[in-house]
Every structure is written in C-alpha cells, then in structure tokens.
Length: 282
Image (cartoon, rainbow, N blue to C red; front, side, top):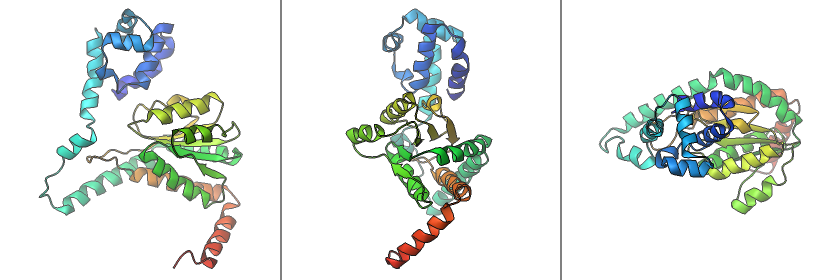
C-alpha cells in the first residue's frame, strides 16, 4: 500500500482534474478505502463512479475491487491493538524473551532513524527556522501529545521561546489562532493519524505558518503541509509502537540546537543554578 501511495503522489500532477481529486482523497484517507464501496467513495469525493474506475485503470488496476484489495490487505496486516495482544507471546514465555525482543526492535528503529539521510538534511533546515521563529509551538494528538510535551520541555532548557499546544478541542483552536507566519510549529504525528491534528495543521499551513513534521515512514497525510519532515521508525511486534527512535531523534535535535544557539549554554547554567538554590533537586 505504501508503495502505491508514493506512486499516486508522484503521478497525480499529470491526472485530469477529477482524477486528481480521487488521488488526493485516496492519499489522505488510505485506511478508509477498504471499508468504502465505489459508490460511497465517489460520493465522498464528489465525482462519478466512472472517474474512480478511470483512476484505477491509470494506476494499473483493471477494476476498483483490485485496487481496493491492496489497501484491504495492508490494513489487515497492520494489526490493531487487540489483535496484536491476542497474537502476542504466551503468558508462560520468560520475561527475558520480552526484553530481548524489545531491545532488538528499539536498537533497529534508532539506527534506521538516525542513519536516515533525510533526517540529516532536515536537521540542517530546521535549525535556521528555529532561530528565525518568534515563537516555537509543539503539539501532537493522543499519545503524540505526550511525546511533543517532552520535546518541548527539553527545548525550553535551552532558553528558546517554546510553547505547547494542548487542551480540549476548543482550546486547540483557541491556541492555534494565536500562531502567526513569524512562528514555527513542530508537529508530532504517528499512525494512526488523528483527524484533529491533520485539520489543525492544514489550517496553520493555509495561513502561511512554517511546519516541521516528525512522523513515521507511512503515507502521512501531512507531508504536503510541512517544509521539513523527519522520519521515525516505530515498528513493533507489540500492541504499542516503539518510540525509542523518537527520543533519540529529539535528543539529537536538542544537542544540535544547544550547539547552534550561542545563548543556550549560559541559559542552561543559570537555570541549573536557580533550580539548585530553590532546592528542586535532592
């Protein structure tokens, strides 16, 4: 499915206008395709069923059913939490085996992420954007919100104008209304992509706000909205993604920022002295 999505993204500029609508919808809603009939898909997009058929033919499929099967097979292979728990290790399996599996996954994900040349290039682009930004906002949906909060905490240590966007639905909209094109938004968004995050980022992008995206290797619906993209490998045999690579990536970004911003060392030293005077640490 991921290869097909990439093929659609590369080819969509050459499609007729109606078929470009189909392409955009498929890319943004790939995980919904297995659950839609051709009539429902056409109705959702606002095109005819014949347009959907022509699009499938353009992509090398004789019918919508064959096109849909690619997405259905992929969705079934990417098991949901319940299935992964159900098919997980036996209760009698030794704890050592669990640690060994997670260690292998974590090391592999970290290595894949930190050796990705795209991330190296993105880091070189991100640092000037951070320096130029009047304010730096970080946010994510669901579990990604906690990850973004930790990243924001680490950046705040450097004395950067960092803020988190969090809260209920109304609070999200209230907060992003304050963001301007002079700011920078760093978004953490992993599968399954939350609709609220996508909607907020598209709104920010439409207002000319620079976006940096930290995401997985899947067909993220936010690629088109971001000036800079970092890829994290989060593959896992367990019911939860392995976020070790995210921690390693953000650590690398923080270390690079500490070296890039001349005022960072002095701010960290002053902050640490203040925390010691206040007795924050034992």
